[in-house]
Amino acid sequence: MHILIIEDDLDLGAALQQALKTEGISSEWRRRVAHAPHAFADDDYDCALLDVSLPDGSGLDLLARWRRAGVALPVMIITARSGLDDRLAGLDGGADDFIIKPFATAELVARLRAVLRRYARQASECWSIGALEIEPRRYLARLDGRELDLSPREFHLMLELARAPGTVVPKGVLAQRLEPLGDAVDFSALEVHVSNLRRKIGAERIRTVRGIGYMLAA
Image (cartoon, rainbow, N blue to C red; front, side, top):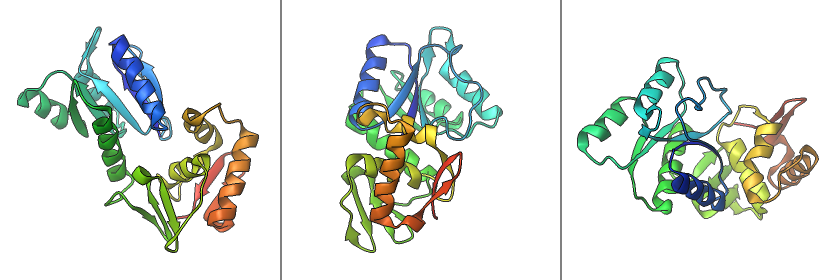
């Protein structure tokens, strides 16, 4: 999972990045509206954490511009404003969720999972892709009901592919999103992890799109 953080508070931004890294989630941190992306590729980020009050503008205005431009990226508003009108403005303006400062990291991560589960069209914490079942929160995976013995790298690799089954995930994206688990993954190491995962879940379930990346069969 790769998250875009737009938050001007230095302490909170750093704390968010560290907390997400502990959960195996990579992130990119921006502190100004002017520094926020204006266009997105489908695989740039899985979700954005967006503060409402930024030094050079409103996070809600930025969100409105994204939605007018057709950006479908899931967005969670993070703010100290707790009034009903503020929450309604965020949700009606295109946000997918709303969390009030101060918040517990565990709640933030749980809400991220819930948002991404909806976007992945999964109805529960147990994701089903054919005979493959994945429980992201428990770090468990089963194939035909049998629990799989996966390394942390293999599990996160499978999870990234499972977020969009039937869709090619570029090698660069996978390498970037596996970084929080340790040293940056180069392509040769990534190929080893893919080979090991194929051996455990079946080679036919992970397809190679030469020169681009990998796809989990839907």
